[in-house]
Length: 447
Image (cartoon, rainbow, N blue to C red):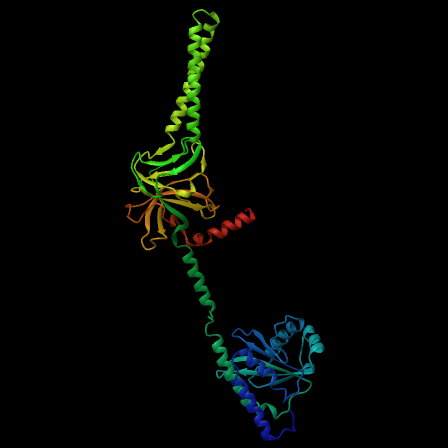
């Protein structure tokens, strides 16, 4: 201790120690104060502050001269082991001096002490009001501290203990501590809950479609000239839906008409020459066949020309995306243009991704939460499922499922989208939670 300090100045220094401890805002800040503020009283080599938990484990909080002792160096590893040894030797609440030569150290502790520490360590335990040890202050010195110092620091130690208890309580405010019995009870409860049967469910995107929809495709090759209906327009049977460009077909009909006229003229001239020319009689059969071929081609072209205006095969609603998507677009025979659906018979078209697929049988429950009507879901049952998964419009490989809509409510309009929840067989809660992880592990490992 610095004996040159007058007694009033010493008291002021002790008051400053208490003030800095009371001003600490966290346990680490208090530990930093404890480790560094004693240097004016003891010119030590180093001071270390450890926190002790309920199980007796030590946690290094501060080392004098360092802001945060986070380095996992060989010295800090050895320091924690040495602190555990000295904590076991400290059996009272009073500070104790431990000289290196008076301790029965193991070889590794003795080797580290000779390399890193001076002749001794002054251990200052910090206890709360109930006598529970909160932590330790290790002060490394060459000789024991003056006998007059521990009594003078008794009040400071009480201040440290008070602040430590308050800050540690705030630190543990939101930290649960369980006993072994509580852990055992929790394990039993989790085991029981894992066996509770729950319905296996999965979510998938879905759309409201019609159970009775007839596809209308292009009857001939051509270019769409006009769309005669709007999307979602109600149509009656025979209502014109769209028309193809007639220019090519009309030109072909005109050419075939001329060819038919030429073939008829050739056939008539050959008939007239056949009265006095035997060779012309042999040409009659050939020219007659050519005339019939030209008439057949004309009849086929005329029939195609009449089919350029496509009409609705039945009453319903015209379902397609946009008029501008088809105007001027070349199409081939059989290409789908739109569909005529019956709005009175809605259904759910569900695209179930392969990664989320579960075992579903016809009749499984389905609930559809529409984006436009989230508070009024649709209910139904699975009617059919696709055998093979195919890429959807979003590029996801999925199975296509068709489900009914119970009651045909008014808000079940065709074209609405939402998220469908499908209910499979009942399984245990453990299987329900671990199905996806187990499937991923099996796919990754190949088990």
